[in-house]
Length: 307
Image 1: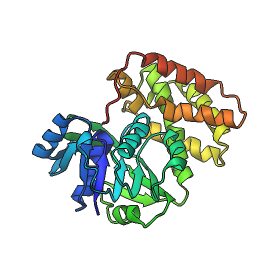
Image 2: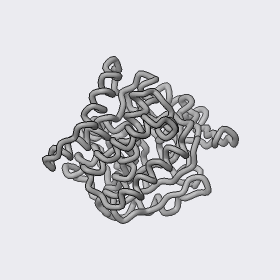
Image 3: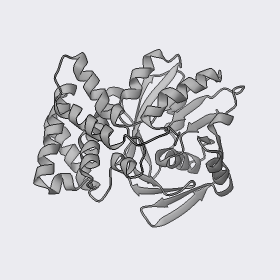
Image 4: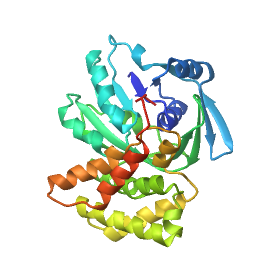
């Protein structure tokens, strides 16, 4: 089975590392030829929570060099959410036969594309691990969580075959029955934590330790829950606070993007929720403010590289 990972940022390298370590054959494609060359020479170097270090060999290539005459049995897409549509369009133009696809994006904007896809097997996943790309061949596994995934279309079970045999001590994988629930739980955390930490330029823990920040966190949570109309609000609120506590010293991915002058995933997270509110004739007040605030901070970001 030909398995291809497109996206060589922190999540792409982290997932590729652990799949390779488990004995799966997987090819990694990146935006830059320079990075592909370094990965082929050095492999993927993983640092586990600042201590253990390990290396695995990988077959890497530039995305534009992907061969159109060879079908992809399973495509794992680990690019930023705003890059998904472009990558899928490029693959279609190259006439590449993709037989199964696993999405690893933040937010839920990518799910709006799924109804138009003719791919017979589709799954979504959330990666709850902390990871930072240190350089073109090194990923720092900063926090141990788990990967939760679920089928949108079952197809022939290629994704299940890959993931069911890939759990490891520091990289557990679990299957969930309802794909919307898998994504919504992560969406709630991202919507509450990322925009506030990005705008206020604070670490995740400040959302709990500062009374004003905590009040803002709670206001965002209530509006998100109003839009999603989910049960077990207390349980979900406790989960949001627990994530903030466990990642107290971390910068959110959105804050890191802003610090490094990269485009954020605000549209896939907050923009998606605003569109959903409009579809339901609900009035969102706080989320549009957060969206405009983050967009104002990223105005000078240029480019749209696959990472």
